[in-house]
Amino acid sequence: MTHRQQAHAQHVVAGFRALVEQAGASGVTEEHWKELALLVEGAIDAALLEKLEPIADRMEALATEVRREAERVNRTA
Image 1 (cartoon, helix red, strand yellow):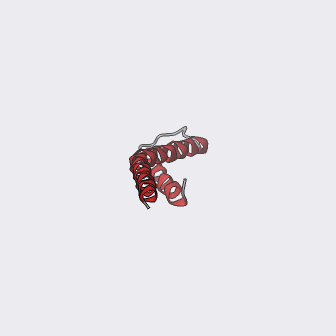
Image 2 (tube, one colour):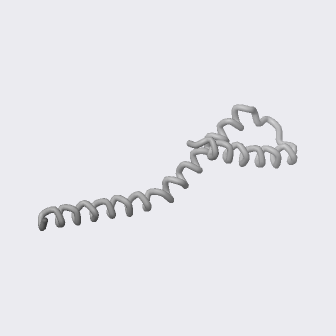
Image 3 (tube, one colour):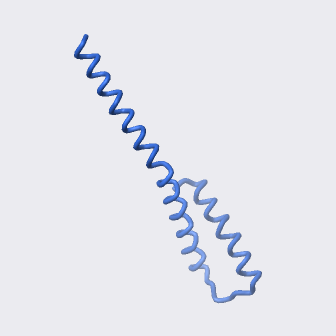
């Protein structure tokens, strides 16, 4: 995870923490907040993977097409 993603996760947790504290909730430890941050980071990673995987598939297909075309040109040369 990049620093930017970690910072975004921390920002989300801080916002949620402020809401929880405004509601007067008690019993939430610092360890709970760290666990929440890890969950948010995991969610960000999963969302990025879901978005980038189809792009990687298209790039792989394009690379295969380029390789086939290069082999075809090489055979005719």
